[in-house]
Length: 398
Ligand code: V47
Ligand code: SF4
Image 1 (cartoon, rainbow, N blue to C red):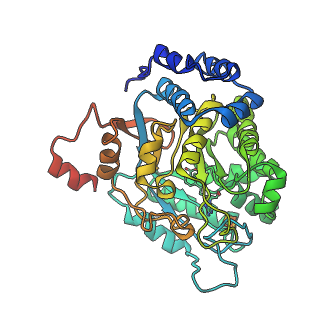
Image 2: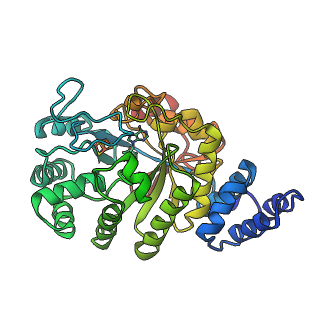
Image 3: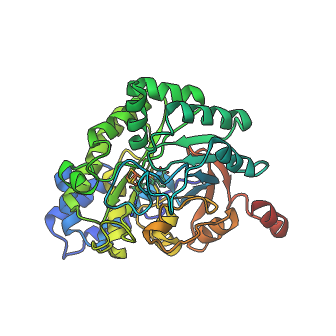
């Protein structure tokens, strides 16, 4: 894979020489190009005063410096054990109260193993397990499940449980964060997804998800996981009642933690979708705001290697667009196994894309499709290794 800079520094300098740009924007832009860290105050200034064009050019410059023209994806499937949840986040369209039997599901151990076995012989590399927080699905239940998945398919990477699920699981089991994580690691859990972070600012958090793990707890669980050799992702739920300064504060807390551990794989901004939840009166962000949010993430999080646009949530065409605004990853094949976003009003009602679809989507915008494993080890570069026997490969990759 090439990592050459596709935008050369001179052409980005040209953008900074625009006479209409303020001295302060020019100064911050120069720092970004020189790979000097910008402070939260400079980040906020850039966010508030920088045009979409400027943010996009800076973000794309960094993206290409870090990842060339690569666009990563993986082959994964999701298991959502239940949508019953003890918590009541106002933005959530997915969960149902424990007592609420209609529209809710609760998978048994055997049903989840049946999902795993459905992929026998298929070249998936990751299972992503995340769901509502259910008291019956406790630490022992999940350790047994992971052990059995690993016994059945040792090479499958198990990326499981948000810090919110874990905080509840450990509290119920009366174990420390470290003990609980060690148990899951011993059972075979390989990494953690980034959900549950929402927005760290305590005042906003108390308004949108008052009763679940606090920001401090979320950060502590990820830091402890990293210390135990469990890498993870980080998310940010944006586009609701927070403002730019809350987003910068959120990213700054992640950047500080990443300085200590270097074990976040990727950052995933999650656009708030307002379908069928207690915040349905809050309008969704525009695509221009989405592009600015992804671009600022790329610019501010200088110690994160990857920025992911989760296509089932943002949509396929927007994901393509965002590849020019800092994004270098579009998650995975997924295969219609997640309901979180279709229930929240995302356009993708049955999110499924096979490998060929993903490769075509990336090639259509002149980028380099690279299948990766969960930890970003390249598995196949589809430019160096194109699809030649198209018919046979299409059948295989489906
Ligand atoms: O924490 C819930 C979000 C997250 C809504 O790590 C909503 O690879 C928008 O974290 N509008 C769970 N977002 C999903 C998640 C995730 C997804 C894909 C990949 C990875 C990864 C992680 O979904 C929750 C919450 O922030 N969410 N409801 C909503 N209405
Ligand atoms: Fe439960 Fe997660 Fe939904 Fe909150 S976002 S109500 S923790 S499923």
